[in-house]
View 1 (cartoon, one colour):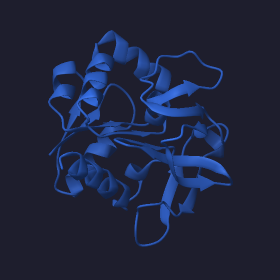
View 2: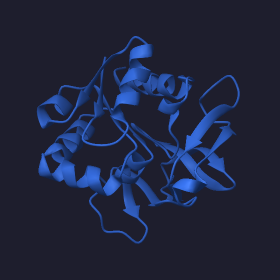
View 3: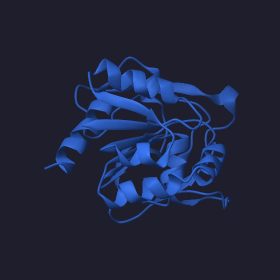
View 4: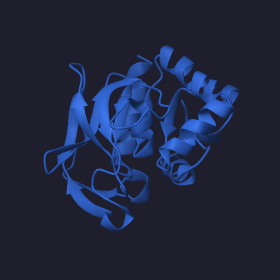
Length: 192
């Protein structure tokens, strides 16, 4: 099992380190051929408009869509969640449109309103998880196949639709690796 972390912009190094801690084969990927060599992909936090523009410029967006058509699990955190969404409120920025969700960018406010919270996440055992929100988006609409995994004050911050996982928070910025393990179970299930 080989995990790729899209490394065009954002906090990709922290995701790579998190999976390395779990002893998983992981690499930072930025070219289409490297994306297609992966069994699963993480879209990191960062600036979603910048990541989107770079995906188009380097042809990585098409490679991600090809990977998705193969059934590979794809996890988007924060900006990555925005890129996974079918719709982005008040924005026509480039996105993959793979998940039947609508998101609102910066839903909790600016950088100074960043916060941490203890969250129960469906499918993640052993109690609440400490989560880090930095200029985080929220999901404002879900399609019929989307499962809500966690909410903060009635705002959806984690969801799954089949092979896609979206989190508004940053598990890679804590030492708790239960969300990464959840994603690895998704990969194991996809390999049947």
